[in-house]
Image (cartoon, rainbow, N blue to C red):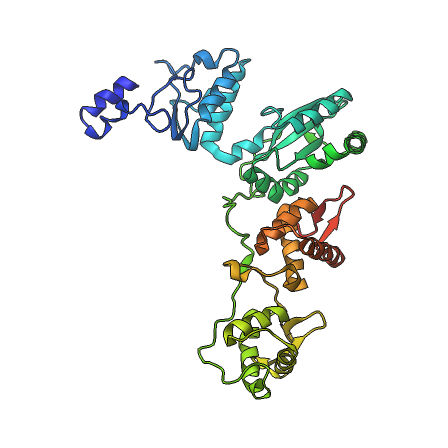
Length: 454
């Protein structure tokens, strides 16, 4: 291959420098299966240097890949790309015959995936497609096996991986339980986000009975969670929810969704907080003066029209900035309350409730508003309850199942809170109680929250 490129470079000078760049991290290289380990590039062209003979016969001998350990060599080769792998082959997966070589089997599956994409992933659940991904999973796997169950790690199903699949001891060729081992310390954020959003709903739809174990809970109270795990296994043994170990190819897996997730971006269901702009005119009176009432009525309509629902403390903050006044004393507060009672937005009255929240009478829609800068970051106590509850509902709906700690972190990120505080925790607790009462989610026996919106 190197010689072919050098010959081509004689006609195309742009290729001349390729073979001279020996930068291990960025330079161009041509290497065989045996020597590629440790190298990474944005794009890897994976060329299969074997093919049919003159008679069209394909000999199932692919050198080191066919020999023992060939599947590991293939895994190394096709995971060298940071962004994309381009596969070049003179034959297709369907041209290969089955045999005993694990390396050949993996090559066949990989070529099938390269050609058909994600549809190929839903056609095989015959066993493990990888090793346990964390010490946590390895511990759970050992416990399950110590009880006499046949458990395998990383079972491929419908384009996902189930952390541990447990086969039914009396019904060959079936899985009776899937075990998910969740812990932020063991999975990348992208994998966790992808799994939390779609995995459980899809797998249950395919017939899987799923038992979820949270890493932090396992290490804090292992005995209790081992007991729950054993109960789940015994229940699955008595149950009827069995999944065939081999399923037919899905020609058009329309029940799956895929999306590229930008983890630095705010959730798509949030909107930017739109703070009221500073009015162009300067006010003649101080907001505590009786003569300022007419101006305050006009000003209240302007601010509430832009920011409702909002807390009266937020209104006072806008007033100080826009009127360039000092503190908000008793006289100013009384004037503000009177102005709010007289002001209207698009003909609708403004209401100030006992908790200090200002709303437009009759307004129904609820938006979850994210800060656009540090000036828009609101205190937990100034977030309207309906907005807080909507954030909780949507976070849980995205995750499907989520721990209270992960929910706490997600809500903090939505509203731009960099700190952990008792006021934030208390507001979340109140919102969770309301969310359960409203039917947005349910609290499961293990302390996690599950959406009812699927």
